[in-house]
Length: 256
Length: 379
Image (cartoon, rainbow over all chains, first blue to last red; front, side, top):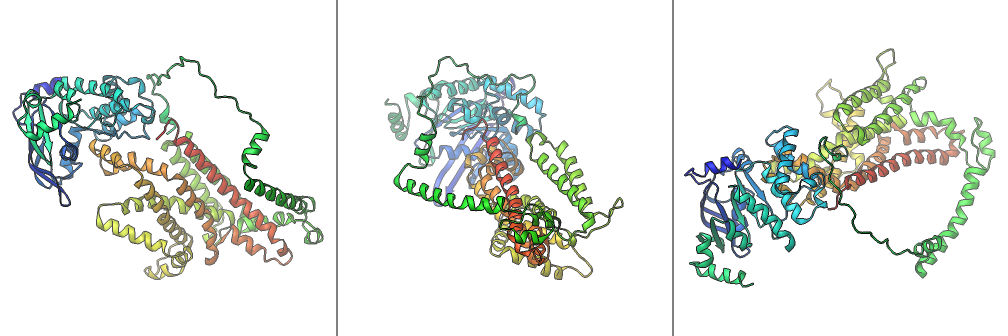
């Protein structure tokens, strides 16, 4: 799988294109004129103060939120009200949530095989084989027959990553994946994400883990007050940011 | 559920971490009868007073009930005068009248068919409720054979059995038909109503809200009257739908409207994240409803669901007012007999025991199901 992704990296067309995207909640503008292109295999880290629209932006990419103006094109498919398009995009885009959102009534293995069996129509045996493969990749195959409630937070988040990977997505979205974790569990999840990044997966990660950002990001995106303020490589972003708001934000989170 | 908990062939079951440290047991408490009494019956002056009053009342009632119900009781006689002479209960009335009480106005010499029907019915229900048989390859044939046998026994008209019209059905089998029909038809409808009421499609939502609110706004008796007396007026001439079936459908819709609100409560308790995770995986509406949302919602509101199922069992006695003889109505009718009518208390106690057995079994079963559903899980 990683080979194919790497081979496609050469393709010119960005895999995600956001053009003049706007969104409002009632009168409150959550996204203002968002423009962002993500190439195949590119790792984008989005940061910014809370309420700046980071989560809203990535949730628009798989239509968990609806944008009201502008266009979003994912892997050549434009997101409209067309349900077929939405489902096609969702099966190509994996998502990992802050609060894991595992299905508590299903065992880990059933959490993983559900979508491949029902959406991809994969036979049960193949789906289980695939699931075990990804559980090994996130290093918890021994938890396969437990329920999510019996796992630690870090283990649950790794299961959630494996669940998303089981759909063999082209793109992975991470919405603050470590924010709900105890400090000692953050590393195990970040390790899995670093490994995933090294395999060539296209990733958009909303996070405040700046160490992780420095390690894996190809592109840093800083958002504030519903708009993208600055886009830069990590070197430029951390050493020499242009915008004053970026400087202020970095000084606030990097003081410790 | 239980089946799927078993490890797959060829896969090792999840290894339990070996206990490496010896654990100390909790401190030994003084456990015993006296401690229990002190904690539960005499923990405060108020509770002590309540306990003493209760004991006093029990001491007064239990011996006199025992005297009436057991020592002075007449257990068996065919002569009502023996009962009249006795000071205690006349349980003989149950033996004397059990057939019309249990089977109503069904032709007397065909009562054996009802016994067969009840036995087959009970076996079918018990097997259906046993997790080991939760497999459509077993359940579907079971329901076809079980339902077919019950229908054949009740209606007859085949294999030399005389035909008995549904208007002549009565007693316990009628109660069972009404109850089962109500739940089997009503439960799927209640799920659809609950989903419909939360639908984003305005037309579906409006229909469900209107139906639920209007059905909940009228008494069950009104619905039965409409089903029996008003509904046929709207049918084209010459068309007739069996009265019993109309009654069952009326009761089922009434049941569904209440049940829908219980299930809606369960649906609202499911966190938004469950829907989002399911949608993000590409599952469609029906897929995530069937696989993700409903199993969790039904588990949450199981006590409420069982509550309404038990109510549905007891609501079957409302058919009294439209001339159907369920077990309670049949008993009332039988107790019109001037020779035995003074022993109606014993007859009704018997019916009460029958109702209690079924209701208690239902509530015990629901507790078991709750146990199965929470196995290996804390959330």
